[in-house]
Image 1 (cartoon, rainbow, N blue to C red):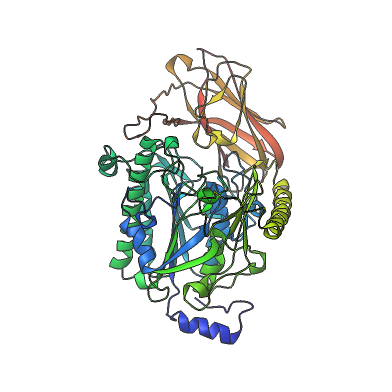
Image 2: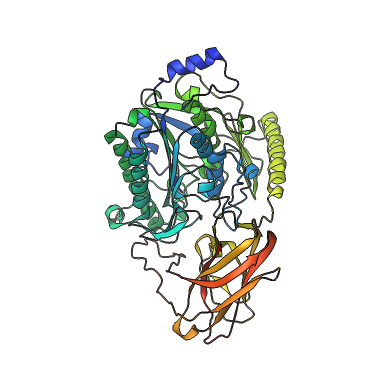
Length: 586
């Protein structure tokens, strides 16, 4: 691999960096572990005595802790900001479902930068930044993918999973399976520099966790509680604690693998979460949880370990962000970023290796439908215009806006400028159709479709749902799409059908006239997956197996259109349940 001196970095400055960061034959390996819905308070190092997380804690004691590290309030936005170093609206991410989670393919990601300079790249877990190519992780810089592209996954024990572009069955408890795949990748790739991205799926719901981790919490009365304990669901808390201890166990497995392969000294390990906790539980007394743009929804634990380079036990008090990892990792790996001018994140490299101090005069913004909040210096301006000194009032109890009018005015003005810019960016990506034909196979799941008539989703969250209750001939399902390549396509559906409903005819139509249809001759009616390890009573996830059926071939022209499924010749009271349609370019 050739090292390229960073643009804008002078020879003397670069020499100092090289002296501080030991020059070795191979650039550093990079492992990034991202938890899903794990709050700042869900670690024993954060003072939570309800659980024990020694392996994650060791990353802080052996490396650096970013004490004021901020992400977004929801999953997909944080992932996009980490991957691009830019505020998520700039990359097209507007939400977490129905296509709003898609990160534009034109974005130059950290995975692409590392891959293009010789790194082997792999992702094992939850992507959540687009399903159809060119939004898929294998189109965005990753050479290997095992996981899922949606925001929710409805079952955690040997569920259907994607390996590359193929659907396969997972192997055991999903976080363990993902970690095993990541370890296998490290073992196969360690002869050259690698980037291993391990975005785990927990403690996001469903709250499924094996007895091994849950049994010690069954009869526990958590000592550390939410600041408003009457709002806390203790069953949810216990499940989350067990899932966090499982995450810690898996982090330990990765660290042991690095030790066994004698890679630890030349591997940067980063750990953080994508938003605040997904329930009211201990979070250091902060206000807000997942979905909130107060401290409790945005502050995440973040630790980085690189032995002999990052001082063990060091604490960085400056306000930092998930956007900072792209420029930071590029600088630490000696990689030039041709779009450095376009990033919102800043490099923490010299701060991490002890060459520079506090990052001053930096405003960090968060945006939601409720407004904008701003973190600057010791302050947070909330979306209602209230000002808090976070250094002395992390819980945001005391509004000091009236006594600090100059700061309040400046932050309100900055928030308004940011809101205007981000809403303008969002408008560029409104009503984006789903792409078909960029690769040989395109999958359009129920999440991305629109039900018409009596048809309903199997769960309130579109991300992991299928269409059911198809009871009338006037019902239909549609997908708004853009066909990228004119070609002959085979149309497949993944369906279930009761015995008494077999014989119904399912028709596929492109609104420009192409169509094909087939009778469903084979009943396929498996039961829903059981939920023996679901630890809360109100679970809205429903998962079952589906069977593939070819409806035939159609010739599609490039351009924007809509696909529609209709049914006729009902033999029973219902048609079929639909998981997805697949378009295979011939």
